Every structure is written in structure tokens, then in C-alpha cells.
Amino acid sequence: MAEKRKVLVVDDEKDFCRNVKDILELGDYEVAVTHNGSGAIEMVERGSFDLVLMDVMMPGINGVETFRKIKVLAPQTPVILITAYAVEELLKQALREGVFGTLKKPLDFEKLLTRIEMAVPDGGLLLFADDDKDFCSNMEAILSDKGYRVIVSHDSHSAIQEVREHKFDIIILDMKFPVLNGLETYITIRGIRPDVEVIVITGYPREMGGLAHQALKKCSIAYFQKPLDMDRLIFLLEKIGGKNANNEKH
Image (cartoon, rainbow, N blue to C red; front, top):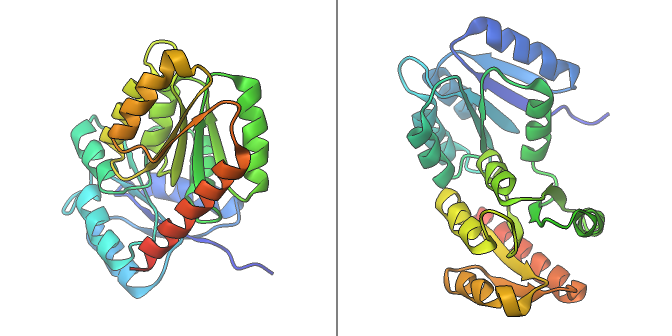
């Protein structure tokens, strides 16, 4: 029988904690609860968790400060921050510092369970952002078969929102989108997640090649033209995965 994954829920609202605990236990998680940042730090010091789900606004140490301390104690433990308040600057800073994602109250519990599944380590987490839905479906199938957990986005705004809600290992980003183009999307993503690895792609090299090369100058790691050279792409993804694994050991 597989060992249950352990989630620590941190929130000063006791009824909220009770509801979340009941729902997660139905999903076969083992759940511990504490109601403040100090308690969370003590529990992480005493034992290991697969994920921490934590409110931002709590008496004493707030959720962002608690996340920073947890990051020192257990750097591989993903943290999802939740809040009912408009604390955008706090959340932006936490995202830049490596929090896995953020969610707003009242929680959509189906969405919460999906986020937790994505946060618990089990293969690299990859965002594939392209407005061609058939192409995305094909790529999702191929990459999932290679062991990646894949989230697909079909426009720039939803891609940016996914980046706020997930800590991706890799993003594959098309350059041609309506409204925000790929370069503008890339720059916005970099502002949220400075360390994420981004591969840019395009099926319009004459029209979009200039933007792709600008993204390369701004630290995207590769540029592919469609149709994609899948052998080269998979080789690069495996290389990135190996580098990230080595970084996590240090």
C-alpha cells in the first residue's frame, strides 16, 4: 500500500482548516493543521511534508515570512499561498522567491486539488502555451508520455495566470498570440518567475523570428521553428531536467 502524501495546512481560521482537512483526507492525503506561522515552522522542523498550504494574512508571522523560513528548513517542499485579501505586492515577491503558487479565497476546491496534484513532485512540470489547440493536444500527449506533467494554455493571459499559480520547471512558449505577443508574454513571465527555463517557438519565422531572437537575448534558452524537431526538443528537455536535479541537490 502506497504511503499517503502529507500536507500541512496553515491558517488562523479554524473552520476553514477543518473543511480543507476533510476534503484533502477524502483525496487520500494525510493532513496536519496549525493556525499560525510559528506553529508551521515548528512542524516543518519536526517532520517532512510533501506540500504546505498556507494563508498569507495571519497574526504574528505572515505567510510570506513563514514561507521564507520554510524554504531554508525544507527547500524542496512546495508551498501554495492562499489569501482573501488584496496583497499583490506580497504575492509577487513570494512568486519571485520560489513559492509554488497562489490561490484566492473563497477556494475552488476542485482547482485546489488540481494544484496540489501538480505541486507534489512526480515528473517535471511543464507549461505549453500556444493558440493552436490541436497542436497543443498532440504535444501534451507526447510530453506526458515522456513523463512530464503538462499544463496547456491557449492565450497569453491564461499563460501568465498559470505562471502565477504554478512553479513550472519549463515553459514552451509560442511567439504569436493575439493581444500580447510572445515576447511581451515572455517578459511578463520573467517578471513573475525570473528563474524559469523558457523555450520559444514559432511557425512564422519571417514574422516572429525577430521577437524570438529578442527573447533569446533576454535569456530564453532556445528557439525552435515549427514543425518542431522533436528529437532535439526532448534532448534539450532532458538536459534541463538533469541540470535542475543537480541544482536541487546543492
